Amino acid sequence: MEVKPVFTPHPVENTIFIFRSLSGKGLKTFGHFADLTDLSLLKKMITSDQTAPGISAELFESVKENYLVELNLKKVDVGGGMIHGNASDFIKDKTAKILLAHISGDFTDGQKQIGSGAPFGMTDILIPSHHEFTRSSAYIYLKSYFPNISHHFIEMLLNNPIVNINPESIIIKNGEIPEHVYLVLTGNIEMLNQSSGIKNILSAGALIGDYLAFEEAPAEATFRAMSFSQMLKIPLEFYREFILKNNLKVEIRELNRRRRIFNRTGIFADGISSKIQNKIAQAIEIIECEGTQCAASSKDSPGLYLLVSGRARIMLENDIIENLEPGGFWGETRLLYNMNELFKIKLLEPSVIYFAPREILTDIPIIYWKIREVYERRMKTMLNPDFVSKSIFKWYEDYKVGIAEIDEQHKKLIVMADILYKNIITNKNKTVILNSLKFLLDYTNHHFSNEEIIMGNKKYPELDKHKKLHVQLIEQISMFELKFEKNNFEIIDDFIDLLKEWIIGHILTEDRKFSAYLKR
Ligand SMILES: [Fe+2]
Ligand SMILES: [Fe+2]
Image 1 (spheres, rainbow, N blue to C red):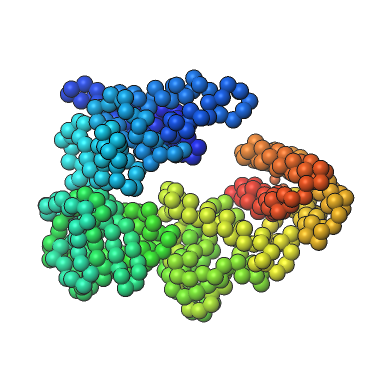
Image 2: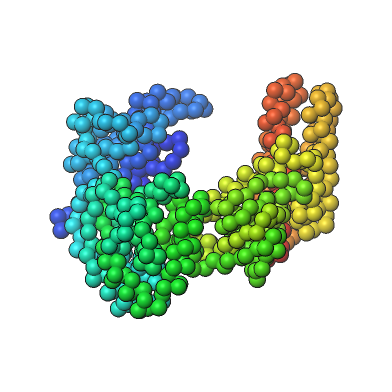
């Protein structure tokens, strides 16, 4: 299959994609027109002034032409506005079938005459395939649950029928003892547990009702199809036999327990497929902690520490950066940057921790995304005077890069930043503030060039990127300096944010990356 990206001006996200493939009846084409802009809005942005923000008339015409390209099938997001298209822009489109999507209410009569509806899970077949995709994915999913089981046993499970389920159908009801285990092959399933308030969306690869094969208890949740779905339907007795024959009862029961715990957390539930959950569940190490004493061999390894039970605190010396409940985690700094953790963890009661080693998380971008959010949130907290008792411009030994010259200069920068910060918050006059700012800026220039020389000597591969960050910081600071000189002190809060980023944020994240490089 060939894929053609088509540029569209869009303020946030992606672009149009056209896919085509050869069939017995020639080329068949499909256009995925998501995240496009309503043409009437785009038209208002036309300007002939090349220096002004906006687009040229030529660009507008080419976008319009791209929208109307004739295809076999086109899916168009018609939510309207800047980030979704408008159905009326496609009135003259000669595409054989247009699907209108990304709209929450009912279609208007006008929209109904332009395109068809597209409920989730609906399929249009352009080129019939004779591949057995569902069965081969069923095999892959089952293999992720039972990695050490021989091929012919997995094939036995695959002898069961694949059934089609309609949207909004209940598959297993809370409290009932089901007769089948279901392996989701396509579509999404809602898991609703009213008593605990837990609600999860399960996608392809999820096994439903499997734990009932050993727990011999009624279902704890209701499972309901959210879309057209296909499932491998395995009789519960058959599944139970399979588990017992392969001597998997203890192992599968434990994996199941871990996955159910994952489903109560943000980090390992939302957007994480069952296949990935299985991979993590198989790799975790359980750390049991009595009071503040934990028995674990890998306590100091890089990885993610998930609090499963108990309570803990993230501390910066004596300050509480965050209170952790089950589902909370730490280990973000080493995972992201291979740098020492700044915070200490204080366990408040006997706790159980799941440790997921770094190797197992490396290829899971969504987990890294969530870890990065937590890292940034904790950085913000530690630089927020409402949360920390000491000055936010304070040197900690953990800030060390490991090169004495750089560390000495960083210490000085922090002292100077503290003076400037205090001058600002105690409302010193303009001259005092400007003088301490100039002093800090001069020393920063000196430090940045010094640091770049040292990084160059050590053949730091990220040097060019790092230099750009230095330039950007100096530019931003100079802009503020100019405004202060013109007596504009209204932007002082923004300046304090920049000061934190310039002195602490940059040292903590960017300069310490160099330190991690030196230690590698
Ligand atoms: Fe630095
Ligand atoms: Fe730096």
